[in-house]
Length: 125
Image 1 (cartoon, rainbow, N blue to C red):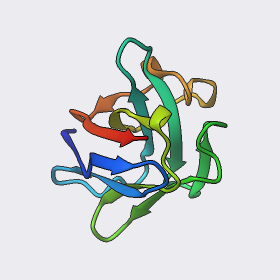
Image 2 (cartoon, one colour):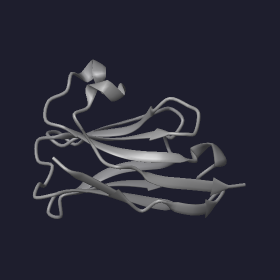
Image 3 (cartoon, helix red, strand yellow):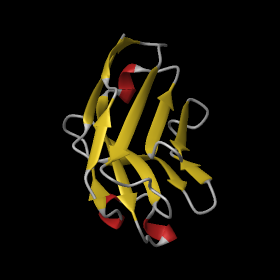
Image 4 (cartoon, helix red, strand yellow):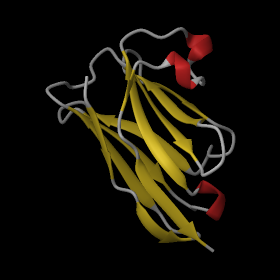
């Protein structure tokens, strides 16, 4: 599965961005989808996840209430709507897709199978 993330850019604090992730030739049906991010000098961290089987969503505490993960079933596109962005949200954002994943591994990078190339989000103060 090849994933392509896009939508990153430079935004002022308080602004919004929407990231997109597509998979070549797939609609993500049956997959667990997620976003991770990695800031310079820091470890990769979980941002949000969505289980396409039941549409359950999960968020890191740091983004809860500001970010929304969603999926366009017809287009086969995963989104991350990011509102009220803060400088600490600056990072490279990666989308992931996993056909099977143990729930306890949902927030762990090594638990996810396929990764996109990342898209840079920069939030200026």
